[in-house]
Image: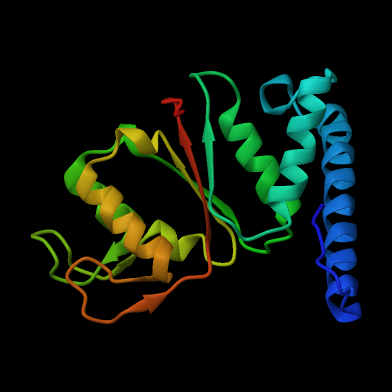
Length: 191
């Protein structure tokens, strides 16, 4: 799980042991969740597999779920990336909802409005202010599917948000802070 440097500091050792136990419990809950999902969901909503490689995936879900880290899931189309994202969200203990945005199915001109929301008068038909998906996913998870299909400009905006947790609605001046975990999916498999 980790390593310690001599001389041992008991406070550090206790902290590491607590983290290791939390991670182990999260991994066990993930495997239990997989069993529960098999009995309570349809085939389309189920992660399946008992092979050693899938057991490693379940363990990884448990480790990742117990942190607030941003996650990138890569895999070919149809491999269950959204199912993995949902399992991470369910295991995370985050109280808010999981909100999904399919980046490839929305025009570049609207995607920032969808993500960040807009203020009244931001564009011709903006008669009221509207929260974005980041606000809607507050205390939960925002899944950005096909994030690799989004524009470089949007990716730069997302990076700023990921680094600071701060964003502005389109045409807004007020900086807002969001407590949302980002899980992104990409069909492009990096090296």
